[in-house]
Image (cartoon, rainbow, N blue to C red; front, side, top):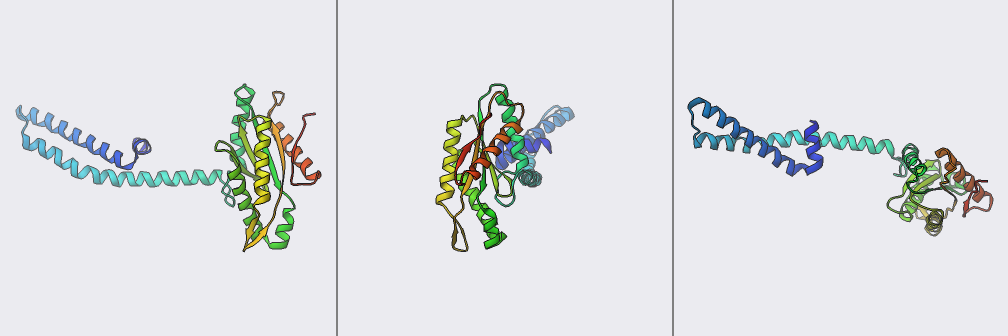
Length: 248
């Protein structure tokens, strides 16, 4: 099963069936040759033809049946893997996956393999949305917030729902200036693209905190704490803004 899975992942269904069919024919021909030669010292063309035709007909069918099972198992495994790292509501990554990915990036940064930054954002006055329009409307707002963020970041950035109405973006190989540019794109995109619930536009803004890795940091919590502090500063300074927390 392991060999078939590797073949299926490498070559796809059609090519794998072809490879298994060719292998079956070669084995059949080889066995026929050995048995025939050992029996009477010669090999007949009729037996060689049969040794070719039988696996050429049977092997594709059995290969397809086996590979279909492997393919279904692989699909189920990938689905479970996606569910384990995905936030169901917003279809972003979940906090657990973010922490695992960010820990790797942090360790790389400690070894001098490039900087990285974190953007932490929180929907402003989100309780008013839930209280005024209901939690289903709040869920729709969160989904559209996630989509606006997704469209504003780069392909190699990692977006996750951090908790409640908080989202966090991991920016690998990103210095402060570029991180602030990404954060501003997010803020503007959310500001100018109100979420629509039952045809009603609900304008929601976000407060954003940005933090960049410093060599003095000892753990991932250090940069996350800075981003959290910066986000609170943005809230206290009037919301719908970006703040950078100092290390002092």
